Length: 294
Image (tube, rainbow, N blue to C red):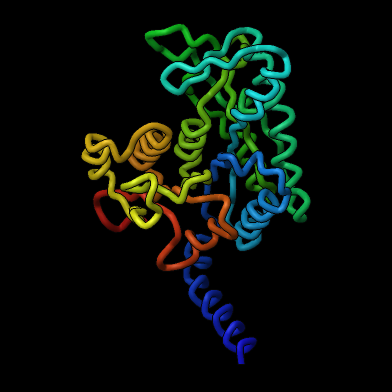
């Protein structure tokens, strides 16, 4: 009977997940929440991600959510008649733009992400990145304005939330010693927070399946990638454009002690659970070149 077979299939998935649940209980995972699915007009797309994050929390994994919100910033800038400018993929952030970044990332988007999690009966703590990420101006050949480079992470408020069973939701902004707000790359912010918290896993949720040898062919997905394979793939142009900051941040995190990094498609139903709790996974995992890092 089809119903019985479907029930058996569900049961086998639960059995497969059990060793992973046992292994990861009490561990810290940092999840970077980004990609076009953040802007999906279908709230169910965002809600299913929130439910998966809450599931991780309920099975004893301490989850920190780090989010960007570049598209939301660009929309507000357009409404105000301010043209968005980018150099080397980085947003030029003048005085007008940083005010919008502050309002949108620390306000609107942070509120929205936190509310989707909270709707699933999980307590959340909204944390503006500028309150915990100390930064200086990012050195660059062009003047990017208020674009920051993280110098340190104040883990106190984040760890306090985690220890209380609360899920922190952190925006990708920082501040300097004068309290000036800076725009921070969200991939970098997630990696630096993962490093500071000694996280076991760093997960990048975006709108691509993972790392593809051919961006136009999903069947070329690289399911696993060791750190020592990264530079050759850069030289071949396989790791390029939008994947560069993710992979560079992933390598930084791994070199600083994070066990594994995952690149997965947040648009797919339950992608984070399939990646973490099944043998095959669903995206790309970046691992240490030496074995025995779980």
